[in-house]
Image (spheres, rainbow, N blue to C red):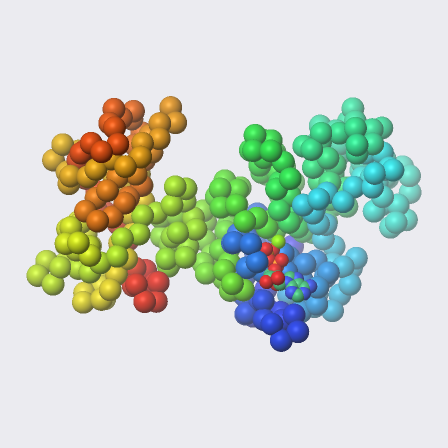
Length: 355
Ligand SMILES: Nc1ncnc2c1ncn2[C@@H]1O[C@H](COP(=O)(O)OP(=O)(O)O)[C@@H](O)[C@H]1O
Ligand SMILES: [Mg+2]
């Protein structure tokens, strides 16, 4: 096993820069997820780590070894792709053993390693089948088995669950996480799905447009987003973002464009006199008979919780209540805000202003 370091890594395709100076430290044994919208450079970064794409500038290290110029086969990594890339004319066992055969490993060792991987992944009874005789989830497992038999220093995954239906995705999420807990192999996993990132990662790297916006543990990013991009990307339903300014006479009041006053528990000194965005997660809004009046716009009961869009002053806000709510669109309700969980962001730079 080994850690991985990206040091000021850059990549251009022709004159077009797609990775603009990325620094990431990945500890030995860590499960790290690169997450960000489509086109932000996640796959390019992963492919550079795998050696499938060269590096324009900077350094990539695997276990203290600079791998910039090392061919993929010498990097001791195993990659699982979105489309699985299984050989259709080979059985499950042969698919899993193929890389070992190329490496010239004797049959006895191949069988042993395939047997162990099949046991871990629950594939032992399917070893004689062909890929077309497997479900999507089983194919996904064979692709992982192929990576496991190589016992690499690092696993790389590029959107491995995107081809599965929603229910299977949730199941495979837990399986991959459990697999990591068992093998403890350093893992770099790419996804555009922030829920996948939140549920699986030890550490999340939020990317946007070729740069790293923030790195942190899932709940750390959720509770302490560094900027508006991360605040808006992590969390579902998304954080409410309301424009306005602090009241010049009372910094514990945030005034929206239409003059509605929202509470601020700890106004940052830097927030005074600036255009701001008031960041409020849906779960920190509560029904409260003494709260601010709001009009119900849409109500969505899911059974487990109730989501609501309500018009508070001139702003539509999304709320999530743990209880069931009997209210109809157009009705007036009263809402209170848990000011301790409000974030203030600088509207120009997008940066969070700390108190
Ligand atoms: N071989 C290539 N040639 C030119 N541009 C590319 C190539 N591969 C990727 N890109 C561009 O690089 C950017 C990042 O792509 P990619 O890493 O695939 O993003 P992601 O995986 O985050 O969706 C995109 O703008 C994409 O169009
Ligand atoms: Mg991609």
